[in-house]
Image 1 (cartoon, rainbow, N blue to C red):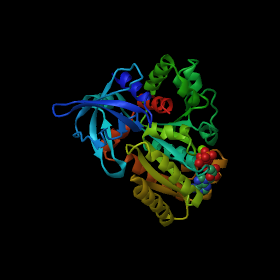
Image 2: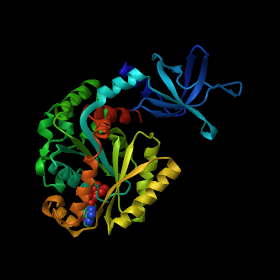
Image 3: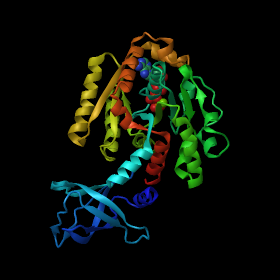
Image 4: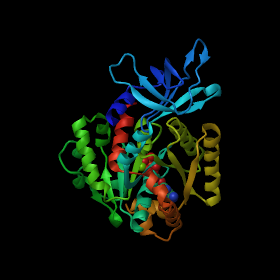
Length: 381
Ligand SMILES: Nc1ncnc2c1ncn2[C@@H]1O[C@H](COP(=O)(O)OP(=O)(O)OP(=O)(O)O)[C@@H](O)[C@H]1O
Ligand SMILES: [Mg+2]
């Protein structure tokens, strides 16, 4: 059932014409509609309003609709009308039926929380933040893993001076187990080098894919946090990780270019629905006021122009201890635990793990779910 609906969604794209059939007690009919936005992760679809002879057909919210693709042999799927949007953006929003939603949530749920660390502009401090926040969380007793998701230059292992022989591509190739690839870092954190394996994720056949997921399930039960350090920019390889992780930390500095690029990234992400939980971290600030000013600008623009709520997760001050520890290939939260930058990281870590338990439970999605979503988002674009 889930495979069928996934296959159906993989055939959809904006601009495609599909057939929508209504068979309720008060409404019956078959209409050609245009696909406007596809969200394969949450099984949501925005389509044009059905029209007959220039008149809009007003189908009640809650109606179950059957969708089919004319030129394809794939069986129709059923979705529910969850919202009717009026005005210039006139359209229908369809979502999954209840039982499908709960089964999928059950399938995806697990104890681990995943978040990506990304930025619009390069060099703003993503890797430094990912490594130090991982260690700060580990110091609180959480089990943390960093997935080095930088498709260009993998560098978490360099920052921490860890020699890694293997990466994800060796697991995909069946050459070793996931446990052989993990490199242990300070305070018991582990690093999973992605390497060329990240690109291969997009080309897996079913058998390799299920082998990889079963490998990841091994880790799922041991970990509380998976932090994905991505490359910078608006590339799909970056946005796909953020979408799959669902919780995205966007790092920026107060520099105007970095702010504009962070907003550009948020704008691209806004197209993929409001299910994403995005938070801003402002790095290299002189004080809290400067960070709040930067965050206010980005949050205002996101709310005003994109109707998107973006949270402020915290800030890190410009601190010489940061580059000094980078040079020594150490984490500053360990080599200078009392410096200002370390204290800023502590505040953010407390915020990340201090959420009410229900919120954590909702946003915790296991490795298996994460990789399933990675595969979906990479495959459908
Ligand atoms: N708060 C800070 N204070 C002082 N220097 C900092 C701070 N944060 C980062 N830096 C400096 O910025 C450099 C770049 O940081 P980092 O490599 O983490 O950026 P990045 O966003 O991961 O870069 P890339 O886009 O290349 O992956 C670090 O080597 C460090 O010297
Ligand atoms: Mg980096």
